[in-house]
Length: 326
Image (cartoon, rainbow, N blue to C red; front, side):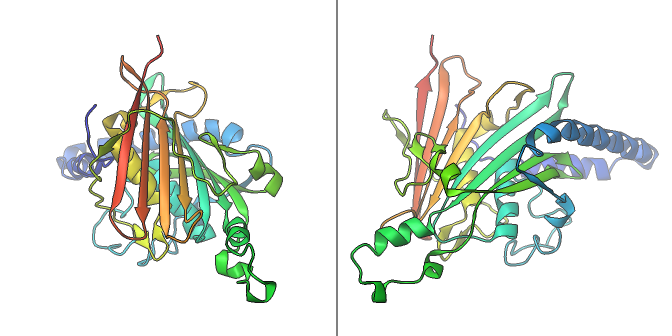
C-alpha cells in the first residue's frame, strides 16, 4: 500500500492556478461551470442534511458563524494571510471539523474524541464528493480528578476547574469541495450528551467514558515513519498535540486509499478515530487509534493505525493490516 501523506495541496492549488490562468475567452465558461458545480454540490449536501445533521436532539448551527474571522485567528493559523488560499483549504474533512469544533468549544486538558468519517461520491457523477463527519467529545476531567485525588484529603484536593470544565458534546458536519476548499462547510449541528449516554458509547472496543484508551486488536503491528506534518494550523499546544493533528497523522499513514470515496448508501461510516488527550497517569500524553474498514485492496480487509505522543516530543505510529475475510 503506498505511503503518501494525506495532503492534496499541490493538486488542489495547481488545479485552481490553472483555472485562474486560462485564456480570457474561456473565463466566463469556467465561472459558469464552477457555479453550476457548486450549486450541484450544495444540493447534494442538502439532501443529506435532514437525515444526518438534523437528527433528533441536534440543533443546526449556521456554517457562516463557524468559519469566520474568529476561526481564522493568528493563534490557530500562524501563517493566515500569507497566501491567497485559506490556510485550511486542503485539509481532510475530519481534520478541519476538529478545528471548527475547537474554535467553538475550546480545548479541554483531559478529553476523548470519537470521530466517524464517511467520504462518498454520487453514483452518477464521480466529481461530486461529500463528507459526513461526527465528532463526540467527552470531558474526562471529572474522571481524571477522581482518579488523581483518590486518597487525598478533601482540603488538599484540586478544584474541578483545574481538570477542565465543559459538557460532553456531539457535532455533525456535512462538507464538500467548495470555492477552493477540499472540505467546504455545507451544514453543521450540535447537541449535548448526558453522562448516561456517554456511558453507553463504544470507542473502538473500549468504553468511551473510561480512562483506559483503546489500543486496537492484537496482531503484527509494524512501526511506520512519523509523517511529515506541514500543518498550517497550530499542531501542538501546552497540553500536547491538537486532536486534529492526531487524526491528520493517522490518515497520512493510511495513505492514498483514505482519499478514495465510496458510493452513497454504503452503510456505516468507513473511518473511525479515537483520540485520547491526557486520559490518565501523570504524563502529558495523547494517543490515537484509527480504523479504515473499507480498504480498496483484494487482500486487505481492514487497516488499523495507532499513535502516541508525549507532550510536544516526537511521536510513534504503527499500522496493522488485517486480511480480507474469504
